[in-house]
Amino acid sequence: MNVKDIMSSPVFTIAPEETVAHARNLMLKHKISTLIVAENEEMVGIVTKTDLGKRLAQAEPMWRRRPIDKIPVSMVMHENPISIYPGASVTQASELMIENGINSLAVVNREVVGIVTGTDIMRYFSEQDLKTKISEVMTEDIVFVHRHHTINHVIHEMEENKTNRVIVTDDTDEAVGMITTSNVAFNIMADNEGKLPSKSIKMTRRSSPAGQKEYRYVKEVPLVAEDIMSELPPVVDIKNRAVYAAKMMISEHTIALPVVNDGKIIGLISRRDILKAVQ
Image (tube, rainbow, N blue to C red; front, side):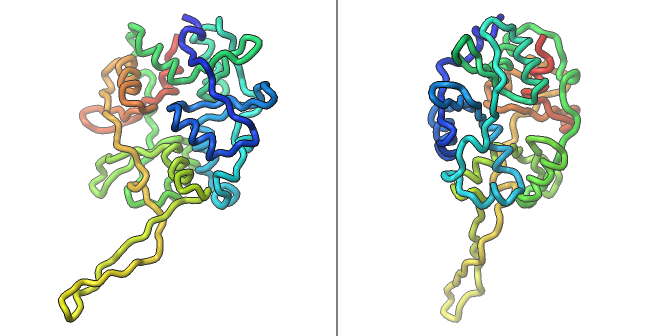
């Protein structure tokens, strides 16, 4: 099977001077994760949901203080994007993504005719009759954060461990959710101020002499992990086949699943792990 058989077409474009806010709205409206950046009908870059996540989750003040409707797409896009031709094999596309640490390729035949993503390749993989086990491709290194850890702490752990996702645990060390760079970024973008959103908390005073409880607002506090986490995806057993995990990720609209052995989470299998298994 070739790239042309699994790519998405037509493509959605955006101009380099348009804003990150507009890019986000296009992605949400059309339920896509990749935009071609074009100027004078020529491709000059590519921007993905992951790009937005990584940029807006950075600790640099520039990204925390600038409203996303003031950040041009040119500041977050990949310039000179890597492309592939329609007749290339799925394996070639997978290898290009892994070698370059990307998840999207522009499909070019003189002009851009489509986009192929890691999810497209994972969908192709899920339809194959392969015997590869989850244990052969999974990632064993997991980063855990507590549900009350601040988003700043979550971002620090992601950067320190060079990971795009962490597992959230409760007071009993039970896994209760997952946070990805997209969770962080889209919460920042939803705030539309280019900074980490916060919440106001309300505390109860003792009853007044009249028997009525009075309330007062306490200053705004940073959001914590449980405020932005996604529901923990279904777990997969380490003994299952990787094809089963790929099918589960497609059906659950997620890019990673916790892997369990005897009921205990021991690793993750992600879209990138699946790309590495493509033959």
